[in-house]
Image (cartoon, rainbow, N blue to C red; front, side, top):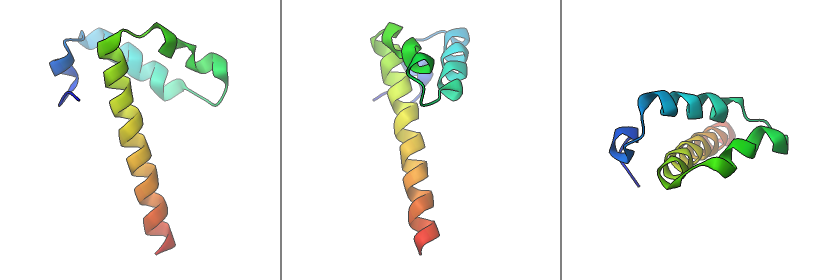
Length: 66
């Protein structure tokens, strides 16, 4: 996985668009349709965001149970 979005050679404007879509997602399937149109580099970027979010969520749950 790339260290950051610049390693993926994605334009900053596109990264900002994707981040807006990613942050706007809900559990509704229509809000996730944008993922179907991602190229390979964009998929890697979004997968990294998803992974970071899950790690953060998991760590919060562990700390709250202690």
